[in-house]
Length: 527
Image (cartoon, rainbow, N blue to C red; front, side):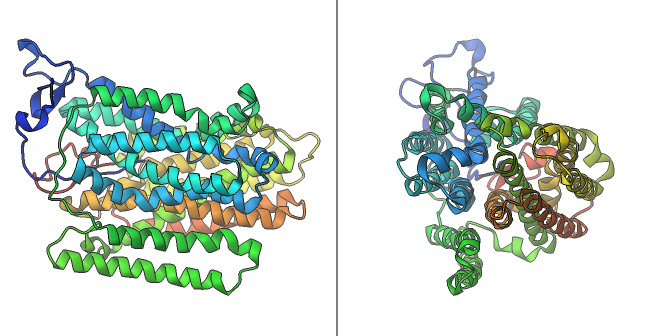
């Protein structure tokens, strides 16, 4: 799921402002890189718009895949670079950390400097860091590069849907978003499957490095398409960018995730608790700064009024809880298969298929009719189904023989958990966004997407620590049981949070900024 904050200071932009050298302007200021349009096309939509959709999908699915594609590379990283449990958690969770911490800033940079420009910069940086990750000689360098890769993703992800809004209109735009959302949703789920195929295939002897190297030709192709066919449109230099506020968020996130990753291995010394306390202070300072900027008439990264809406603030907590549990248990499933039962990377990737299929089924049911018909209840049915899946999986794990174990022994529990997750994923953002005003949608959705990513990073740290704490004594079933217990606690808390959300979700067209509720000059969003 992705968020874009779009600022439209003026209702229209003249063709002279949008057309570059050798380009002509189409409707709404869209430019034709072909350099000419015939009279019959002068009032029609931009003719290369479907190539824009292709470029956005390729680039952003590539970005989302990298959040989970490394899950199955743990044993290969340990053998090649000597990565321990903490190193693996940083390789996986560090990406989500910098991605989440930079999303709101990335969206604001797109407003100021133009979404096409920031998309190209982000895609170039993402492709380059992918290549460098593939060449990393040590686990420390790989962790650093993954952090940089996440930061590049934070520039890339917020721009895509806004570019589609600029080039598609009316019912056609609604169709684009209807296609765009599910593709991105499945992108993160199938990551372990693709990663397992690449690692086990060991193409050209590259092993785990192919997980990152595959991004290079795909990224270059998307970059060529985007540079050639995405129309030029200037940004709005008057939009201010709160770099100090962005720095506070990044520091607070790092101080939160660092002790969660390192605490278990180091025995939770004093510095871990000091970091957690400092993280809370950092978030408080960020909120204070946003309030002061708003009072001074400047543009804050986050509208302070959002934090005064109880349904929105509890919704933030619910999103963090839900995605921490979802991402964490997906990691534990992969670790259990690879470390506990010596699955190859490819088999472990296929072991995630029941979860992917279940999630797709649940998402289809929720998005097609359940959310509209039963409203908020879908967010309560979802975690109950997940809890039933976790309970079934708990009992399936008992009494399994390592010698005869196969993924089919636990497929039913994993798939049922996936169905519950899909029911929630398809509807959650709409219900939280229903608690905010129209002119706050852009700021609100940016925060929600950032919290989703940071919640995933926290889930990697917490669930990884829980699993490895028990797996150290070779009790892999007990380690999975402990992870399921943590998931059950998170789901129970999330279930309580859903009772405080609005009863009906914000209409789909308003979530995507295709409605007319928000006048020009207000922030709109595409989620």
